[in-house]
Image (cartoon, rainbow, N blue to C red; front, side, top):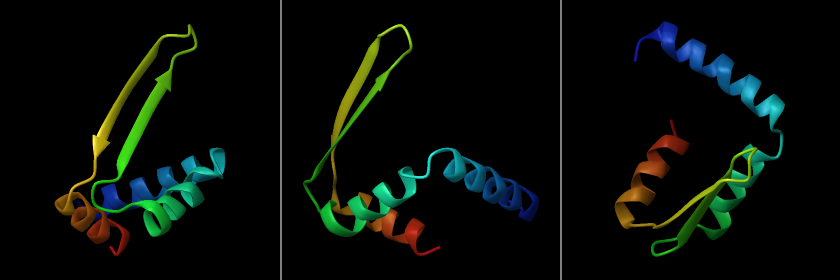
Length: 73
């Protein structure tokens, strides 16, 4: 990723956080207080028409290592 792309991403992330102020603190709390190996993350998206798409994933050691690198970069 080049510097221009990184700067654009940073600006877009800042705008996303401004639109959704509770999301970033939620992610940080989940990461620091609840996310452990074998934790289950449940995702559900509800479209405006009521259609739902849902999935679960079980967190593996490698997932935690990747998240740690992302959080510390």
